[in-house]
Image 1 (spheres, rainbow, N blue to C red):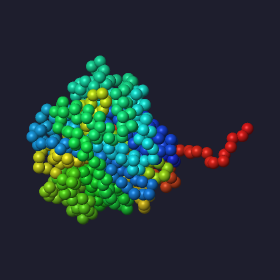
Image 2: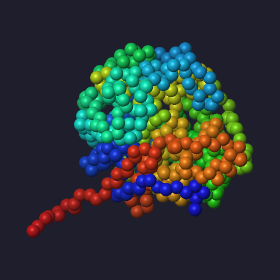
Image 3: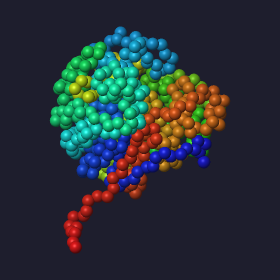
Image 4: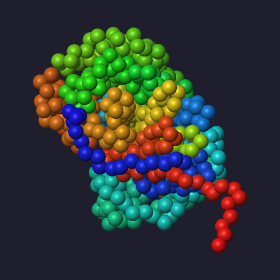
Length: 551
């Protein structure tokens, strides 16, 4: 019996011919439609992403950015970095920084890196989606965009998740007439059960279907974006859009108790720091400690603090910062950090290496019958991004500039052309060369720590995929230790006695989407209670050739 028992709120789905797990049922349906039409996992993933821009507009958009982890049928892993970049005209004096204590502190006067034109980074999402489709997909762009066009044009029923997000950001939405018209009808936040039609956005999607990424990176959509941002204090230019390029990166491959754990490299934190934390935890028997026990949670809290301390000085865009990947992911470095750990007390951790010289997201996991798998995390960063809509297109701009450290002279500081760093964690786990698990989730700084916990739930605690994604989580970066409601009071009391400042929160990070790969070829999809996630499995197949019907 685990120290922190919990009740499952959802059930997993199974399939033999494919699996689509996204954070909205209509997006999962769009991906399944493409699989049933003969597309592969890449086709289905791109279709689901475009659909998500319609049904989760507060989370993801073509003007955002993200990372796709693609495992092809031949077993190779490809990381496509479509993260946003800082505009070329950026200057340090554009933001007035407010004081903050934690490594992640990045508040500025008038929230200029949160809302408005200055908060918008050069978008990479559309370029990455279209490139992934062209390189590894099988279907035309117009076909995979079509489900999203239909959703935008005909509308869909708003759920509580979107309605609550509109309520939470109503003041920022009100500053933009286009967003206010959509999400604050009659001056009040849109309500669950209402029908949301986005005709202007349907038109933009049709243009993308015809012209591809060129519609934005040099075309009419790009000019409309730049005009809107310039009118709102932004410094992005058409030259920034024209110069934008995706980057294919080598994945980080770590090992844990004989398993291979594969994730994205810098400027993503996940691959490096999940490997780092697993290396430290490998020296402890977490399974014997029990899920949710005070010892297990204490160790999680300590390795999270270690990872965040190192992340603050080392993990950023490798084109600007010399990231010591080999050192951070080495077993020897883990031994050094592990030796300083104490089971009976919480500690404050600083970085274990010197500084180099030089919030809201969505995720999908898709697999097909041929062995292609996509784990993609995408975002416009905060809820509704910068709360800036491009007129006549219905497109929402990101506020990715908030991800940078606004203070100059740091590894994560803003520099012209620099790529945003991210906590995105589209992860995969293999055992004896066989793919075992693919997963990811939204949630800002809480993403890669939560992905780590899902992996531990499967490998150390023997949980099913559904149990692993729904299990209660913990998180800290050095301040309070956040715990979800299912962590028992007795465990909280023990943690407090060891020196942790424990804070109960309703949820940590967002809805995880995972696909497990069983030895018999069955796919199991799991989505958790923290979002509108749905898993849709595809089974069956076409009749054998030569079959005739007779009376």
